[in-house]
Length: 593
Ligand code: LR7
Ligand code: MN
Image (cartoon, rainbow, N blue to C red; front, side):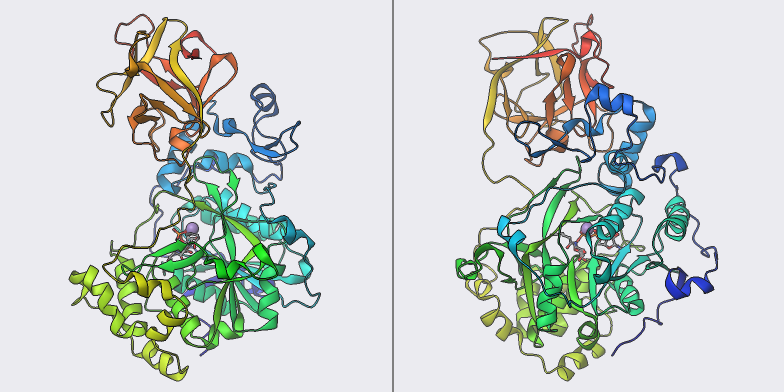
């Protein structure tokens, strides 16, 4: 065991002792493909929000809570929907390029800067807990590929800002051979000049994927506990102590925080319900409700919960135990499957896996993965095949029943992993199903899956705030569908108001959705903020379907940061679009009940 990751060629850039050997060797062979121009990154200031003060005042966007504004009456921290306001073409470019490259709103991410407060989402009882003084120290490992610099540095600073120094042994950043030239250059510079020596940067000389990337990071770690994080996270108040405590009690305990939701469209931070990890026979991770029995202990909602699997990105594990247990399967590429593999291995080989409700870490949940694999392979299938053949015994048939085309597919050499399983004396997959995930047995491969929990989607029907017409003040016309209001992808236009026509009736609800004739939601393009809005199926996750009514009668689109406008008020065509909010007449609307 305990390889130091030497088999992967990588380069220490700097940090700690290795500082001496720092040499700024250019990465061979890989010319950056379409790097971002410099101007798309925020400057390295420590200010909370990167919006000129004048614009902030005028538009009441953001304060030191980032986009969470403290409500003067309720005292609660609330989200400011106009954080992504576009003021000029450059903002628009940052936003659109950000969606293309990272699948989240980089304009807002850049404006938030590298430090922000987040709402404390823990159960209030967590605040009364105390933790041992002699906790083990942690090495935080963050592996990244083409991450938005502001999101990566907010991850790093949230750790630095919210972790007691004596518990934070080091942070190890593993650049998985990112292609964005400025990310490489600016990050090196920033780590060297702005971060403590205990933050280290290492760069893979070729793209390894997150699995081998984390192994490289772990091989350089010297703290007692490894803590893995994705590169677009923000840790919450007192996040680390509750994770280290169960590891101190039993080094074979692996722990995960509750993963809170950072919206990809607004970057607002919100609480997740406490759920636990499961999977289906397609070997996809899913969230399950926690069986009541797990919640009924004396500690109630704050007690650790046994979890059959982990989501993968955020967990803490004793470092020696990580090595003993066989790290990861280094034959797995880029993305996918490693989370189930390590989960099965932990349970089957004598460890346990817990979710710790008092530890909270936010993660940006994107709607798509913004990168592929170098050769375009389906690495999820490759990795799942490896894990099925090593760990699932006769139950791998359940997977093949769903994916018959994979039955004869090659999966590389698994001898080492099969030997590891023998050497560690691991139990059978049947034992795992019977004892750790009995719900799975009941459902079986063809039966109906248990009710899944969608954690990034409101489960209730949002309350209706208002029902009525969307009246355009300048033209005295109403917003309607250009074609039939049930036609998905249809445009909207302004036409003569007809107060008896149901097809002109909009619903505005507490999720800030605008729904025409109770059918479809007014929606905008994710990657092209200049495209006109369309009627689409309501997806319930905000962003492109979130609209707010603001000053000057404006109707503001939260994700594109612009206002709804009639293109040519004199034209009978009545076309509408979104444009930079300027308070002008073509942008003025009334919602009339
Ligand atoms: O080639 C790559 N090299 C990398 O370094 C590809 C990715 N990465 C980095 C990437 O920059 C990121 O920091 O690896 C990290 C994880 O990649 P994501 O963010 O694209 O993954 P994800 O959040 O979409 O997917 C989840 O499942 C993955 C399966 O391989 C990993 O285990 C992720 O860590 C995991 N994320 C989480 O568990 C966060 C909560 C998501 C849920 C549910
Ligand atoms: Mn992620």
